[in-house]
Image (cartoon, rainbow, N blue to C red; front, side, top):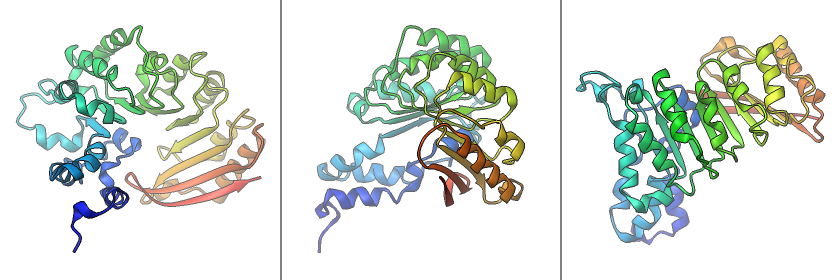
Length: 315
């Protein structure tokens, strides 16, 4: 009977995909929908330590996504600390660990951090920026929950630096001034309130962005969006408010818009799109100057897990 190491790499990689919590979506990170322990990590870690054959397959999976997150989900782990967020070292310890373990550096594709512990301390931010410069193949980056006191430290640490490998960026809206450090970002997710602050920082600097997520639709915000990212092709709206005709009409006559996505939780009946809302979304896509078929995606989620997707093609 064949043992696990006897299986081909394709089957071993397929087995790893069933540990779904290894692949935490950016929206789950932003909304704090994280488990105290990432399900599957211990299994993948154990497999990577079994033998050289399995280490070669599972070690890249284990370190492809790295998190240094202080959220209410891991609050029970921090209760022994005197003051939550002030005397914790999640970010600093994790960054030092990456820096001191060179063989994991080329494996990291996704990095998610919270800056909660950096309120009066600059060292975790310095370690974080140093590690960013060491990751040649980092594609996805999430930076959320900064204290106002920490923002000048971060902006100063990023000054004069660029991180060209990052293609997908999820960032707190008050951190807009550092976005030019990521010149090749294609997908931008906004976190927290104050989207206008983020868009004002983008004006004339990030025209390559094609997809923007978690954007509130208000008249002033949409006008800034048109001005800051005139070539945006995809807008993803999360269920912080109902998809309504009035707000959708603000998106008419976008130059390059080819796709609208609306994501809502299965339990949130108030946000289920009505037929009149769907018709308005179709009109928005038809009014776009982009050529070809447009797409409207209505996605039903349970926390961060996609349960169902309705795809409507607009010709």
